[in-house]
Amino acid sequence: MDDKIGIQRGLTSYGDEDFSLYLRTAFIKAMGYTDEALGLPVIGIVNTFSGFNPCHGNVPLIIEAVKRGVMLAGGLPIEFPTISLHESFTYPTSMYLRNLMSMDTEEMLRALPMDACVLIGGCDKTVPAQLMAAASADVPAISLVTGPMLSSSHRGKRIGACTDCRRFWGEYRGGRIKEDELKEVTGQLVPSVGTCGVMGTASTMACMTEAMGMMLPGGATIPAVLSERLRHSEETGAHAVKLSKMKLKPSEIMTPAALKNALRVLLAVGGSTNCLVHLAAIAGRLGVQLDMDAFNTLGAETPVLVDLKPSGKYYMDDLHRAGGMAVVLRELKPLLNLDCMTITGRTLGEEIEASPEPFTQDVVRTITNPIHSGGSLVFLKGNLAGNGAIIKQSACSPDLLKHSGRAVVFDSLNDLADRIDTIKDVNKEDVLVLRNAGPKGAPGMPEAGYIPIPKVLAKQGVIDMVRISDCRMSGTAFGTVVLHAEPEAAVGGPLALVENGDIITLDVANRTLTMDVDAEELERRRAAWVPAPPVEGERGYRKLFVEHVNQAGEGVDFDFLTNRPFTAKTP
Image (tube, rainbow, N blue to C red; front, side):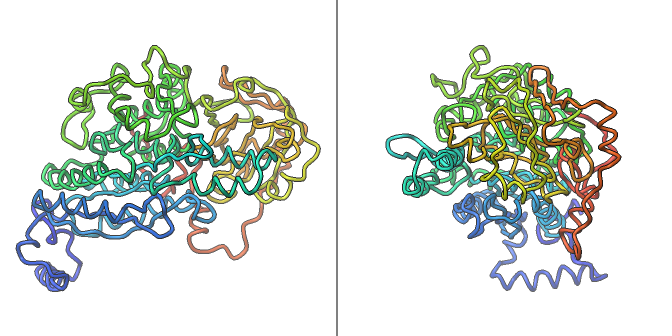
């Protein structure tokens, strides 16, 4: 197989390889290819354009640039479609379909005759799905993202999706802005195609992908609509041809040490909590386990350097103008595994040394002058955290990092939607708890953990409360929000045992999340707990999902897609 190139690879099983190649050649010639073209290395290009995916609105232009690069380097570019997911256009949540996209991509990487592949992703779940697929198929592949959108302005103030989306919606719910202003700002929040222009999940995954070596240097931060994005795409296409000859596989790049570099960058950029789930899934495809206790240690020594929303004040286009990931990696250099191989065939240390010289800017801080220290993300333990829960302390209200309050429990997403605007028996000291919204319970672990402030409190000016759930929140969101509590309530995890009025204590400094209920009472509640009955008539993908999805700590991947037993840990 290795000595074959292009369309000679992976011949269809007819029992006669010569006939298979003859038939394939006859059909591909219908596309107008010459024998000379068909003798070249084939570079597959994953086309994730969709009319339902504004984050990928520039994909057609990117594909043309990639094709140009492939042809200039002596390869034959062939694009093919896969599932495309956009966060706000996917019911019930894009996370529900991430694994399906990874399966689609993996099987196409295995099935189609290509020597290397360019994975064009962007929106939140697309890059993780593609990296999961690449890890499993283990064929030469290179990541290329669509890039962040530009920032905009509203009434003289700079804004951008989607941290400001949530801020304006909160203002509207609290009665501080009217519907006409909300409508006005809606036309300004997303001024161009591309992914969210803050350090949300898409931007964080792009930065982590560059840090782990699966992307050409500089690619993470280039805005979607700049000509530079197309030049980078052309370079990616050209490099894919080199990659096909180098035969450098994802498993040789996404090593435990490289994954640790990605986790280090996640912390330093003040990145999305979702990326812990995604990295656990990518690592799990490689037989690598995320060690969350070690992650807390990593966090304690990794300050937040990037002053971007939601942890700071700037936007992704500012980070790019400040020098992009090269500046971040150069500052983190003493803390990184520099011997890790990258997609270029050079080590991360060599790429950092070859990066442009830094210049004066205030978007990326120095290690001695960070915007936050002590870990942007924290792993919590305790009798309410179960196997663990996550909080993004760099985006929390400082006065709520240690807090005790009365539990106000919502039993499901429907219960939350029905009561959040009408509930009266609630005060700002209370702790809002949402359960049965995890991988199996929702299903799909939606981004509902950013529980709205009850309307009665929002109108009083309350903008943050301690909120706890077994689901996720958008990487663009902010607030004192505890997420990913596992096992989830739907399978009998600790959140299933909470009752209204229980006193819950969050102590981020001590990494604990507890409820003031003794062990004997918890055992009594556990014995009385009854799981929800299965949905009648469940079939197809939903049935597969609910029966096989893992918990957050294992990446919410399907059990039959993971590589077990674990052979290594990271960080």
